[in-house]
Length: 358
Image (cartoon, rainbow, N blue to C red; front, side):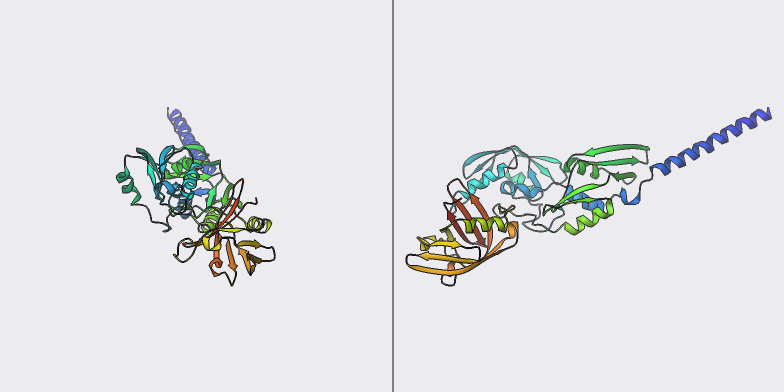
């Protein structure tokens, strides 16, 4: 009987030792590399969350609020013209209505009820302007720094694994966009062990594509590039019309077409002054010379261009035509079937050249 009892005890102890050994081995197998483990509230965790949060500034032409956006479709009246906004491309339709006339007041009216999408992708039903104002009053004002990072974007799909140490369950999930990734990140608990499947690809605001190999590299990239672009957190829908503009493109238009005329001129709060330049023509040359002619008179000056995209600065200096001179910012190049317009601004000042060459 004692021998049988000893055998049972020995077998029980052996099983416990074997089970313990297996558990230790299992724990070792699932232990992820530290540089691939996402820790809640770590620096890289918060940077990821800020990068994939919902950007509310994209539709400021409608709601004038940076911390949420209006869920589409939505119907608006832009200067009394009804527009069905079904996608983000339709924001430009509203802008086209506003740009049709320079001397009118641009007004937009939202048809309620609407739904707004907050930074964490939660949704709220809004019945009127008073309710909308309650939410927009909590947003940062125009161009005031906020938490979201818009200069870095993730390229999808992205895959992650999560091990819950409470229930010892492991799950692999794949994300195809910012929203699903954000919801996942937002629901991670302290006892979850989360690893990202690297490499991960991110795109920067200048168009550069970067592959990162671990969380340490990702943290460096996001910290380095988070403030390298204009997040356009303002209500001026007209200040980002040159995202794709280049100096080569501008030079091609200005020097490739002859006899530009001044279609629009505003200087120093003096109102419209383009009428003073009726019958003046301007020619821009590749060597940096600009020549204007009026009747039998000729006016010679210089022009230079530097920068890129919405930050292209064009310096025009014609000593005898001071109204034309400034360190202008290229605002827009607009090509229509019968004419091309090149628009420069600086604060409230504006000069726009037009040509029937395209």
